[in-house]
Length: 424
Image 1 (spheres, rainbow, N blue to C red):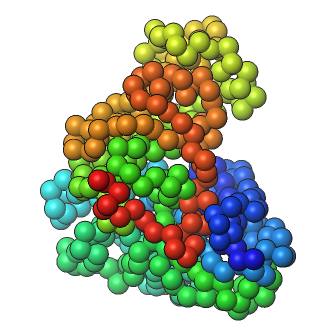
Image 2 (cartoon, rainbow, N blue to C red; image 1 turned 30 degrees about the vertical axis):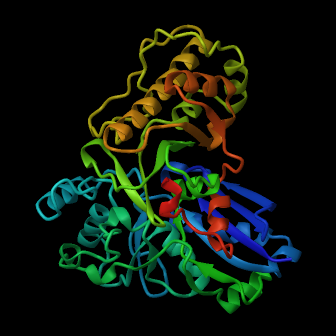
C-alpha cells in the first residue's frame, strides 16, 4: 500500500491526514494549539514532530509523499540552519502599518500587498527591525516547516507567496519587489504540489519514514480546504467556517479588488477568487464552549428572523467583504437569553457570508449555484439552514472538510488543480 500525508497548520492547532492512492483516509491526528494568539516557530516545530511521531509504523514506512499547508501571511526570518532571526508575525498581526504605507508609494495602484497584514508589509517590517545580518531566508510558515523535512530552504509556493508580492500571472517576482532592500531573502517559488525533493535521511530515520518519501511544495490553509472539497466547476462557492470566515469561488477570470479585500489565487488554469473576513467561528468560541454551542443551537429556530443587528468581530478591523481597519465589532445589545444572543451571532455571520458572495458576483465571479462548507462550523445544522435562507442557494457540507486532506491530495499522483474546461 502507498500512502500520502498532508499536514495542516492553522490557528487552532495542527492536523495530519494520511490517504491512500484511492483518496481514502486511513489515519488522522490533531495537536491543539494552547495559545493561538501567541504561537511561536518552536510551537510549530513541536507540533510537527508530535504528529510525525504519532504516525503508525506500517503507514510511515510506506509513505510516498508529504505536503504542508500553513496560515496565509504568517512569516519569519531565519538563518541558514532555519533558526528564527525574528519573531513570527502571525496572519492577523497589524504591526506593519508603517510598512504598508511605504508600499502604497512603491506598489502598483491598489495592490493587495498594501495592507499591514500582507506578507510583503511584514517582510519590510522584519527586515527593518529584525536581525538581517544573520538572516538567510524570509519564509512563510509552511515554507519553514517544509524546509525542515526537505533540507532545501528558501522555497515557497505561489499560494503562500501571493500576498508577499509574487506575480502569479507571470510566475515571477516583479521588478519593483526585487528592487526592495534585502530582496535576496525572498524564496524561490514553485507551483503547489510541485516536487521539492526527498525527505532528509536523518528525519526519515528518526520517525521511521520511507527514505523515498517525496516532499512537495505546499499551500495556504484556506486554499488547502478548498482543494479538499474537490470542486472543479465554476459557480460553486466554498465557505470555510473556521476561526475566520473564508469564501472562495472558481472563476475563469482573475478578480482583484483590494479595496474590498478581494484577491485571486492561481488555481491550475483557473483563478480562485475570494476573501477572508475577520469574523468567523472564533467569535462563537469567545462566548461559548463547544457543548454550549451544540445545546443552544438546537434551541434556535433558524427560519425565524432575529432582530439583533450584529457584526460579530472579536476585535477592531475587517478585511472582507469590506476592507476597513477601523471597523468596530457590533455586538450590542446583548439579550438575557443566550439562545437569542447566539441566534444573533449566527445570523450576523450568515449575513457577512451572503454579502461576500454578492461582492464576488458584483466583481465578475460566476453566478452562485450552491455552497459547499468546510471547517468546524460546517456541522452546525441551525447555522446551515440560516445560511441557506440568506444565500438563496443550497448549502451542503464537504465530504472532506479538513485542510490536511487537501494537502494530502497535492501529493497524490494524478491529482491536478482545476483546468479551464471546468468552467464550461
